[in-house]
Every structure is written in C-alpha cells, then in structure tokens.
Amino acid sequence: MEVVDRIKSTLTEHPIVLFMKGTPQFPMCGFSSRTAQALKAVNADYFSVNVLEDPEVRANLPRYSNWPTFPQLFIHGELIGGCDITMELYESGELDRLVKDAQKA
Image (cartoon, rainbow, N blue to C red; front, side, top):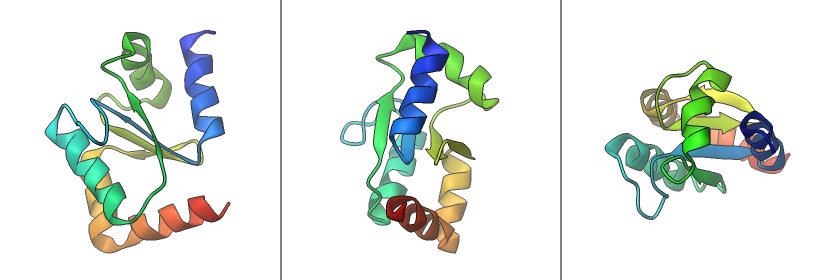
C-alpha cells in the first residue's frame, strides 16, 4: 500500500489521530509529550502513530497535510494542527468539545 493511502486509511479508520514522535506513554519530543498530555487531560480516545518508526509517513505526511512539523493532530480526517494550536484549544476548552464531538460520532 502506498504511504499516502496508508495515511488516508488511518485517518478514515480513527476519529482522532495523533502523528507524533514516540508514543503517548514514551514521547520522544517535548511537543509530542505536551500534545499527548492535553489529549489525556480531556479523556480523548485516540490513535497514535509513531513517525520515528515509520520513515515513509514521517517524510510524506508534511506534504499530505501541508504542515511541516510534528506532532500533527487530526480529528475526523481534518488537520487540527500541532502542539501550539492543540494547547491553545485545550486552554480555551475547545479541545474538550472537539474530542467529545468526535467520540460521539
């Protein structure tokens, strides 16, 4: 399967996806760690992809999403953003709403 097809398939199969460096339990960068913590704080049930273990996804996701850095948070297949945007949404309460809406669907 082509890497773009794998990315699309992952986004279709899971309402909330975090492409990150490392895993939620063992993040390998501070930005990924903060994003995973924000998702945990709002009780998000999400799927994570460790881009360090998948060089094809790491190389191609920035072109697919038009977002150059990691982590990348997607809800319902739509790019929400990276760490800074996720933290802003968390602090405003919007992340909680987005997550609850995604988990209802």
